[in-house]
Length: 120
Image 1 (cartoon, rainbow, N blue to C red):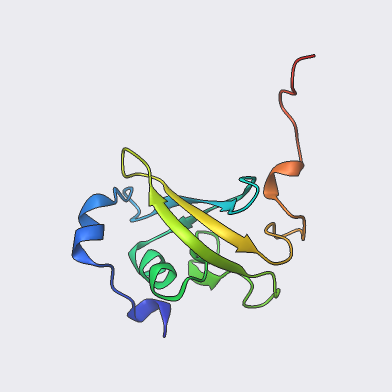
Image 2: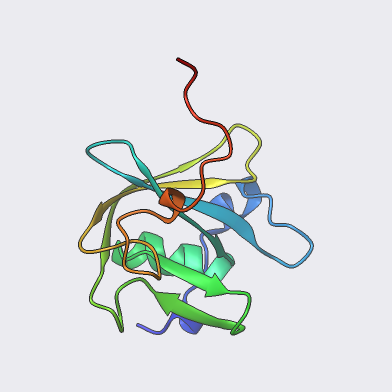
């Protein structure tokens, strides 16, 4: 099933508030630990493909193309649950991450810089 061929259910499409570029931020969270793994972008076909296949599918703004998490790296995401926030402008994916979620190979994209640490 090609991502480009996927169509979002009209009821779901009415509830999602895509931005001016037709994108919505998608946060991938470890389904077991709750750790935030990565942030990416989805358009309607990427969201439809994710819902249909349970594979994390995203839109690359830099490459202007779709990517299915793990298709080239082997670091796959099996999507257990997809939620929409209260405003309809952010998608939350609870995933089973195999391998690193970050393009650097790290488990999460949020290990690089701590701007404010826990107060002690």
